[in-house]
Length: 214
Image (cartoon, one colour):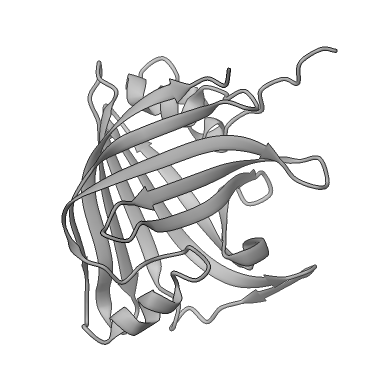
């Protein structure tokens, strides 16, 4: 039986025009197809995790139930991101992103990622059954920066998509910086609320590599 071809990565549609110039770390993580059964694994350390105001911790605790965010803060937190392709029930391919933060109690932040050709954006789905969806715009800034920013969000219930009010919906901006000849990336994750301002963020350094199933 012929093995199933590796699917294109969601960000390959954005980065393909820059394939000859982007850093090796971005090629490994975002551009090169990943075979089914294989994964890209990024390991590193989060320099700092923070949130504000203090009362938001209770909301962040609730988000741990569907593995979306977490209330802990701290410095020098070991972390890992595993990216692997999976098949959906309708035969489509999506990327599964599994983030693990090694606090005294491990916290996970899981999502699936696809590319939507109609809107030229990335669609991230979080929570049980992908109930919370966010669209993202990615921009490569030569020679070593990638910026991914959220635009809008909605709740998906079966075939219904219910937009969330922009005034209440946090936005996220993720900046990755990579060396031209290294597998190391620096990640800066920042969440803002339209009314509260900066409410959650972390910064860290990761090294990436391809894990091949045996």
